Image 1 (cartoon, rainbow, N blue to C red):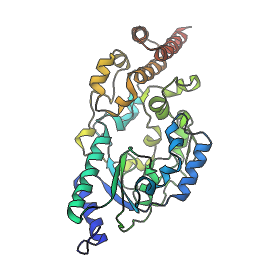
Image 2: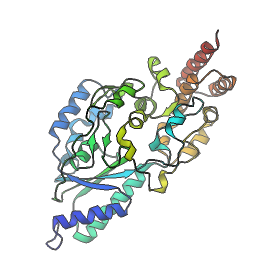
Image 3: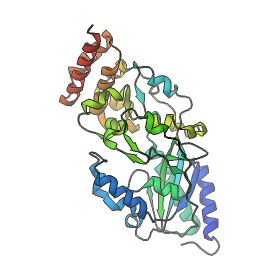
Image 4: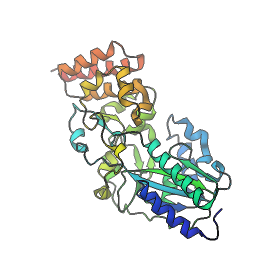
Amino acid sequence: MITPTLEPQAVKSWLAARARELGFARLGVSGVELAEDERHLLRWLEAGLHGRMHYMARHGTLRSRPAELLPGAVRVLSVRMDYWPAEARPAEAVLADPASGYVSRYALGRDYHKVMRAALARLARELAARIGSFGYRVCVDSAPVLEKALARNGGLGWIGKHTNLIAREAGSWFFLGEMLTDLPLPLDAPASAHCGTCSECIRVCPTEAILAPYRLDARRCISYLTIELDGAIPLELRAAIGNRIYGCDDCQLVCPWNKFARAARHPDFKVRHGLDAPRLTALSAWSEAEFDARMRGSAIYRIGYERWSRNIAVALGNAPPDPSVGAALHRQREHASPLVREHIDWALARQAAALTP
């Protein structure tokens, strides 16, 4: 526990300073009480808006009760790490080019999980070396926690109408991580909301997944459809996906607070393999071995080659009619799984219909 020579405020000050040295932009401290957020979560689950993310329902209230994840936990340290890839081709330009594939900006570099988890674990070890053993658990999407609610309560930002966290000084292009602990550190003041009357994120959503402020239907969200969904993408939503082959950033791109976005400092978040503006026909030619070799170490790797190929087929179906697109789809169909073939056949039919006078 905290020794008399290192009182709680001093420990918190050291943590904040050391976190910055380890690459985090901000550290905040919150309690573990999330009663209202738990009620919001349960209403969302009861409405079935989580789709086929069955783990959300399976974890239930565990997600809103940090002390059940770490017995004795009284505080959560939330950290933010900026990832905006300033050197990437402008997102709007890629979205406007149907021959290119759009990859969510967070996935252009290496997988953030290992980077943040290693830094958080180091922060905990170094603190233990200073004050002695203490209880903690590091989480970076590795445990069921309401990370945005905890970060809000720790003063890192507010939850916007699109359900992402927004910081006044940095917009929303950042990752979050947590350290649950039994240390009774001083609390930060929760962040206040500053969306005001703006509803641009709701207006711009291609699939109308944001049903109302703070209410997201994951089943319609392009990030869910291209990443989490392991089956067929609903027919009625395929055209709206456009050229988005992994995730979607539209609600963040239109947010006025992102004029304050900060460029990524960590080298692992630099663009790899030209994913900021890849040609769809070139991506469709990748074999499974090529996908494994190039995407290993990326957040994209976890969706696997089948979903990747499915997403590219949809994007090619949405591209302007062109012989090269049809040829790419036919080549891919030769070795595709039944799931991918179904999406290729849809894309070929869409290409043919566009060519019909």
